[in-house]
Length: 263
Image 1 (cartoon, helix red, strand yellow):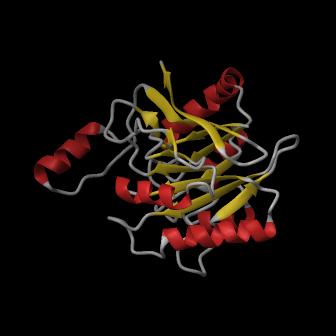
Image 2 (image 1 turned 30 degrees about the vertical axis):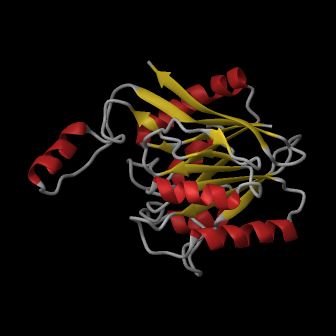
């Protein structure tokens, strides 16, 4: 099974590029599923129900998120009724939405999509390592047929991302980092068949600071005064990783860094 996982989609430029180019990318790469992190897809910070619907209409099969998913008021109720959109599972109990889902498409094996968030330099929420163990045990008990299992680890620290991948090696198909918007060059297969990449990068403007307009961020660094950030204009790149996964064992066979530049 061949899956493309896209890094954080940034605002309207990222959404528009995905919508325009995804059909051609699917065909060119022979993709079975396309997944993405969408927590910044509306205005560069957060996700609206309308924005999520636009991404699903564009052909995305599942969306994960992160710490910005709570920004817009319509999102909690939308998450309750849309199982293809998930939020980090290690938020404390009682919040809306779900931390993992099973993506099912006709003619394809089912795929578990899991979302966790790191704690280093981020919110002090529940332990992602223990949350991962609990989710995998639940999948084993309730969905033993779902052997392909992908994890979006939305985290700041590279060490935390690497540590979780080693903790889960051989028990999950892939651990893919998001959040920093900087695509890393370390895609690899671990010893026991888990694919790992520290960060998938972003789908957004290239002439920017992590997708945002450059000048306000420069002023903030130079003056330390508050600034209003906006999504940048200009050329866009879509980045992520393509995975080939054995659909009988769930082991990753290959992972490669992927980038598509929109002229």
